[in-house]
Structure formats: structure tokens, C-alpha cells
Image (cartoon, rainbow, N blue to C red):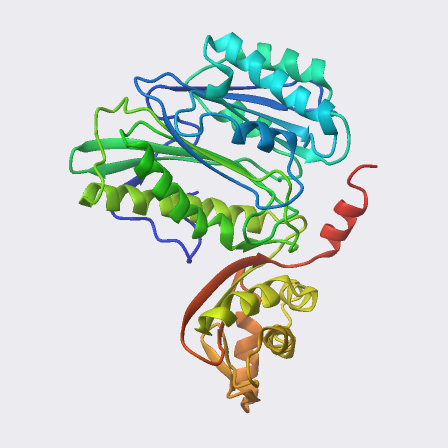
Length: 413
């Protein structure tokens, strides 16, 4: 199956798919079972063997930060040599003990790799508010260090929680200076809202980039991918994206060149498809939606989020119910709060005009049957025009199912 399988992500012509668990030159990874989760792999280690070490990172904007996020923010985020991740326990809201556990794991990974602690970024995902078993985590760090190999399979499995399957890819990117590899491993299925979701993502490339260039490209592509997804409108405590580059290919990406554009296009496509995989893996999800809102810049984002996070819209999406009144209700609620100045809204669903100027259009019986058929697809698109101009917002979102309720009702029991 092709990695680029959503109609909303186009594979750039200069990008080819490789074995999804492959890694760029100069990277090794491992995943082991340390007993943090009841079963399965739960500690992963990713190492940049050089020849250079350049990195960038992005984290959750929540006021409640997991200890790994706090500790990682203190690291040398522009020159990380390794990243450590664990799953099953998020190490959040455990005070000083949680911070000590995070720092102990960072130090253990650094010692095993003969690098400095500030050269290791860390991440964790799982249950909030419980102590992360420190000795199990540290034993896992040691075990992972002994199993490093040029393959991401075990690492990509060790970061999973409620995910149905690993999310990973490796791409060959043709640049003017030669070919480079670009790979990523991600996790996420619930507790998601734009800016960010509950996600971990690790990106590796053997291209040579300056820290400033990598940081710029990371920021732009994260905003166009992980910042635009929602499963349940809930902002996580632990979201982390690490991008690592080592120049092992010998191909340099200079700023403000065609190669920077081409590399950026590849990274953008990679992260957008991973973001969509996270949405489609939303706990119990069967369909995903894309809402695009155009109008005044201060209105488009609130309206898009209101539609994407509406339980009424999401349950209608799940049931393939073409009840577009739920979309209008969500938009009207957001416009009232953010000063929309009336309800002169246009709405299209799957390219079919349903509302103009806030008034529903008459549909023939054939048109209605066609709409009913269209919203049964795995991907459904909504387009809204609200008052004003100059702004555009896009959010990808999952449906809301019985499975989501069941999974989260029983999450810790």
C-alpha cells in the first residue's frame, strides 16, 4: 500500500517511497519491552551517528507540561545527538519526582552513548498523573542501547499507546546535489486538537542543513500538518516533534535555493500524511473530514475549529448523515463569539453547494441521494465561506464513534 494514500496529500514528483522502516544513512534505532506497559515494546532510542548533529523541535502549548517536555526544552535543541521515548505513562503531574525520573532517563541514555545529557531529547506518552516506574525505564534505556540497528521497526512500535498500527515512512528525495533520505515515525490516536494533538513524531534525514534552515522548515511544516488535526479537541500535555539531520549523504541543502524548496515539499508531504494517519487512527474512527474556511482572518480559525470539534458534526460524519445543519450551527456559534457580524455563510459539502448567504438551497431528490452517497466515503470535505476576506483555515478531523467512548471510558481500568 502506498504511503501517500489520502487525496489531500500529493506526493511530490521528486520523491519516491522506500521501505517504511528504513532509516537515512547515519541513524540507528531500537525498541524494547521494559514493562512500563502491560505488554509490548515501550522504550525506544534513536541515535544520530553523524558526521554532524543538527536538530529542531516543537512542543505542546499546554500550560500543563509533561516532565519530558520540560527537560527536553532545557536541552541543546539545535544539536541533539539522540532522542529517547517511552510509552504507557506520560510522566505528567508527578512534580519533582517526575522531573527527576525524566532527567535520570536522559542521563542514562547519554551515558550509554558517551554523549552529554543536554544532547539527548526525551519524550513520553500514556497515562497522566501516575508515577513512571523509574527503574523499569532505566533498564529499558540500557537494553535499547544494546539493540541499536539501522531500522526503525521496533522504535516505531515502542512509541505506540492506543494506536491501531505504527505510523512510519522513509522517502528518497532527489535534489540538485544528489539524493537524500527522509524518514519519520509518529504516534497518536486520541487527545488531539489543532496546535497540537497527542502526538510524538521523530524525523531523520541524511541531508546537510543548517540549524536555522531545519528549524524554519520544521516550523512551517508542523503548522501545515500536526497543527491542523483534531480527534476530540483536547490539547495534550506531551506533544513533541524532533527533527534530526546529520549530513551523511554529503548533499547540502542551502537556504533560499531550489533544493530547500524541494526538501521542504518532501517534508511537508511526509508530515501531512502522517497527520492524516493520526486522524484516521482516531480511537474508533471510521471516517475523517477536512474543513476549509475562507473569510476574515480573525474568523476562519475559530469557525474551522468549531466545526471540527463539534460532537454533532463528528457523529454525523461517523453515521454518514448529510445533516449540514450541524455544520451551520457550529459555525454560527463561533461567529457569535468572535464577532462575525451576521450569518452570511456559504457551505459546500464534497463540492456541492448547500447554503448561500446563510440560506439553504433547494436540492432535488437526485441531488440529495448523491449527497448521501458522497458522505459515505472514507474522506469527506466541507468548505465554508464566512464574512470578510484575506484568511483561510484548514482542519482535518475524525468522526466520533461508540468505539471512542468505550475506549476512553475504560482507558485506565
